[in-house]
Length: 166
Image (tube, rainbow, N blue to C red; front, side):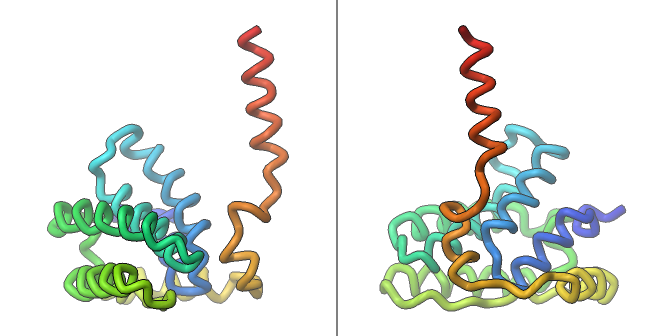
């Protein structure tokens, strides 16, 4: 299977192009990254994660955080330009959009979404099918997901870890 056809990468593209849920983009791609290249900081998947994170910060008005992480995303994705994790998209368009987003962030312009142009008809079909299955989204929830999501499982795991140390 081509690495861009992995179900988690398809989900990433669907969340990015479908409802611009950059928090979910980060979550699903981090899971994929942990499967294929754990702890490898300069992997193309980290560039994709950084891109989603930067756009999440920009949408929330965190221009400094967005600037920092989008620069990292550009470096990582540019270094991976000929690798398999960028083969089935319009890479030139991606890098141009990323560069334009950085300019807008530096000017403190309001957030503006954009799309990843998928050049593979098979990949595009898979992404479009997943987009069609997405439930309606609430823009406030998507914008503030890190604060509004149910974190009880995370907090429970942390508590268990603390208890195991004693």
